[in-house]
Image (cartoon, rainbow, N blue to C red; front, side):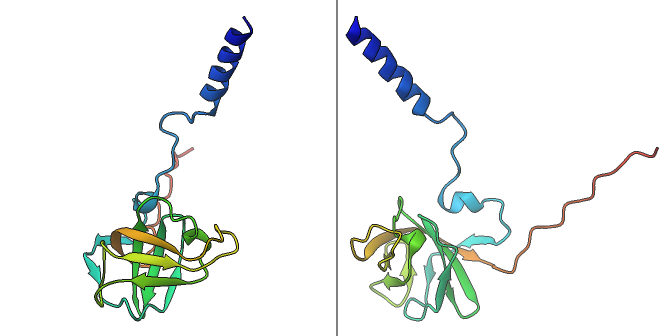
Length: 144
């Protein structure tokens, strides 16, 4: 009887820990689906040796910048240290960054602390940091 009670309690506890269907937040580039800054997919970025900044980093995306061009890069899975990155490098066999290359994330105090982390690129999209969402139409009111 004690085993039955423990089994029922464990099952109830596990059921309570599961997230409700449809409540998961989109991850990666999918999280930016309605964002006007998100542009078309690109096959390669040919500035791999001259990146001059990065921003908007999350566990699986980062915006890389070179001069006036910006690109949203998504990595496979979660790149634990990417969200807290203090430096980012590129591991590319050519002068262009492609889906088969990797981002090297430097040590970060909020991250794993296990040294640089290598995160393979899943997708690259053009990014327009100046794009704004279109103004929403004003709600029409009925005459009184």
